[in-house]
Amino acid sequence: FGARGTMELFLGVIAHQNLKTIIIQSCGLDSGNLDSVLKAKAPLEHLELYFGMDGYGLDVNIDDLNELLSGKLFQNLKYLGLKNCDFANVLAVRLTQSPIIDRISVLDMSFGTLDDEGARALLSIWRKLEKFEAIDISYSFLSDSTVAQFRALGVPVDAIAQDVGLPKDE
Image 1 (cartoon, rainbow, N blue to C red):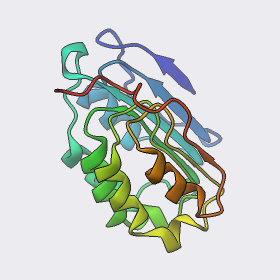
Image 2: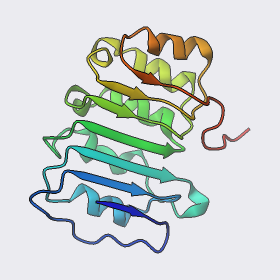
Image 3: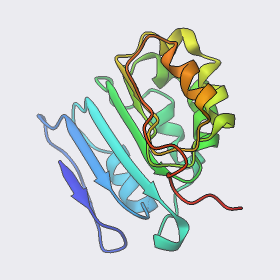
Image 4: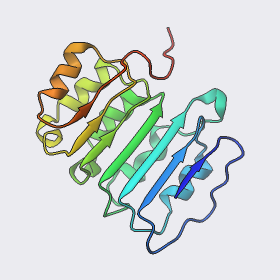
């Protein structure tokens, strides 16, 4: 299931015994739609959330992801895309402390504001990351040396187009 929209998007109840993928592309994910996704009754294997920015309706913060990061939801989840996120560094830190990181095999944090600070947090759990099938940190704000550290994990890493993620406050 995929949906693209911003303030006009209303997901409501999501339930299907064969639903394995949810992709929500938004310039401003709202808490109601996030809540619908997190309450989905489905054997999800692939979850992609595009968060966006405040000016486009984003009213989700890191605490709204506690239940997802707890690892209690979506026991079949393998692909976790937390994309287009303007709180990517805080999210990266929380992921390092999250039980869900032990279960997924693909992490996608592309198109956000992830920089070397958040990347250092992720790299601190390198033993867990080197077991992944893939990591996507493209369209972020990472230095060449940080990208090299990810590539040294021996995992396929997509790190194209650095310094072109979401606009960072100067």
